[in-house]
Structures are given as structure tokens and as C-alpha cells.
Image (cartoon, rainbow, N blue to C red; front, side, top):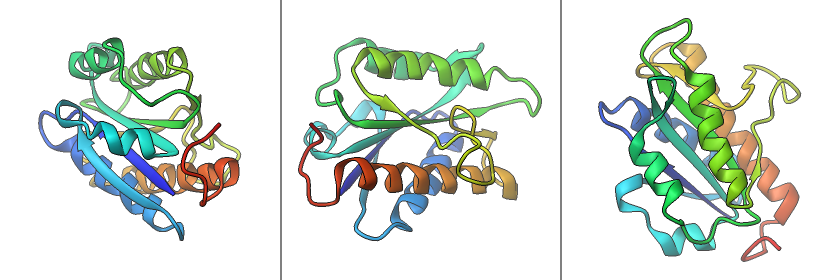
Length: 169
């Protein structure tokens, strides 16, 4: 079962989050994961994947224009797949991360994806809309959120699509 992680990162913070999300995915047996920057998306891998997780820094309460451009220009192979989101923000208490996540989520829903995080129903740490980190995920809570998101997405993709399916229906 394949999971793709598509992210944009200017400073490396979101890229570090992507690596932790991948770690969480790989903690689930039978899961293969590939991370890729938004400006170098492996479209064939995304098409083959059952789940795609998207990451972006927060800019002025929204996702980066690079992520928005990707979502706005007709990415291929997203419909019917499981999706998750993660964002980095500059400030600890209100950098607009929830709005940034919702901007990405809106684009994913338009493309026919099934958005999931696990929310508060799959144990701690709670994820609400997705994983959020203040700058680089150096604190235990931020690292745990990223790993938990990856694990939640991988487990739910296996539950929904099974590890032997090539594509979700």
C-alpha cells in the first residue's frame, strides 16, 4: 500500500515534518511511502498511492502559494483517495495554522479526496484538522503530532482500501 507525501518547504521546517509523517506511515506494516516537494511531484507515484498527505508552511493565515498553485492547476490522480494535512507556523499561539489547513482541505475536497486526521478520536496527541508544528518540529509534542498523523493515515488507508488494492474505487 502506497502513501505519497507532497509538501512545500522554504526553510526546511515543513520538510522535517514530512519526514516525521513518513516515519509514522512506515510504522504500519505493509506501507510504502514517498515524500516529494510540491515542485517535483512524482505524478505516477501519486496516481498509484491510496493516500496522499499534504504539507505547507503557513503564510498570512493560509497555505503557501506554491501549494495553492499545485491544488489549483489540476493535479492528477487524487479523486477517491485518502488525504491528510500538516502545516508549520511561525508563532506558537495563533499563526493561522487552522486556516492554512482548511485552505488545503478545501482544495482536496474539490478534487474528490476523503480527508482524515483521526481528530480527537484516535488517542493523543490530538490532531484536530491535521498536524501543526511551530517552526521545526523540535519539541516532543510537535514531533508526536507528525508521527501520529502518518500512522493514522496509513492505518485508515489500509482499513478503507486494503493493502492489496492498486487504487481505491
